[in-house]
Length: 155
Length: 155
Image (cartoon, rainbow over all chains, first blue to last red; front, side):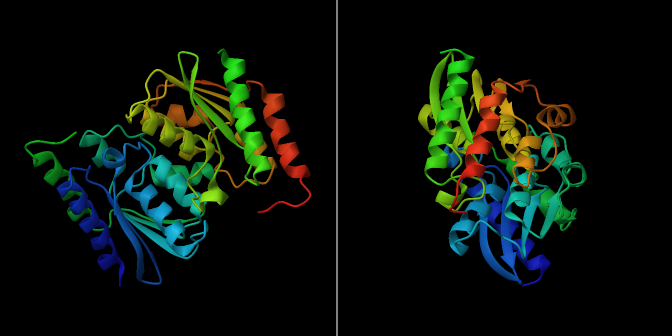
């Protein structure tokens, strides 16, 4: 699969999450064009404030591959990973982060993000992964619109 | 319990982790002087790169209290939380971070930390918790010495 197809998996996961009453975030981890795992935010479902889509995907990828080293993998994230998730990508040794919407978009949608971009985190922290932002941004931002339009949010 | 006793719980958890072949990091979350949970790093035991002591403690505290909001709680961490764990503290709404050793000490012991201090993360991100570093630092740094002196490390 190519980048567009893999980001679509992350978007599909986010849409699935919204349908299940979760917040509008999805992520997909892939290696050599093959999906390892796609996941959505599970914070409310799991009563776990750390269960962002990227964290869930990284945990599941570790389990699935039986390793804590995810070198050679790319994470596709519907929104720019927050600093928690960015740092988890660093620890996992992911090669590449590809994201759609920006942290600023998530803040605008009402999420209490720490306002530090991935590129700033990389520069300050001395991380080495490649970061590509704004990929399929329109479809990614649309997730916030779908979520905001829900008449009754469970949370 | 006072701050010293609560930090001691984090140190005891780290020592327990070392005895079980884990890396030398411990954390304790408390509210009104009562321990909610003490935990050590479980990255290797759980094959989960996100299972830092603070993340484990936050997850378990959420479960135990049945909420994703940990306002009114303090986290005692043997080492300055890495940016992943710092950000998780922000998301959980913890009031206070108290830590012993610094990220620089962890780097010196061979851990591949992103070199961004908690005070810098707070300032850049617009977080609001109180941060107190260097608390019982001697005992906290000693954990790295114990860990480094192990003849055969499992990892």
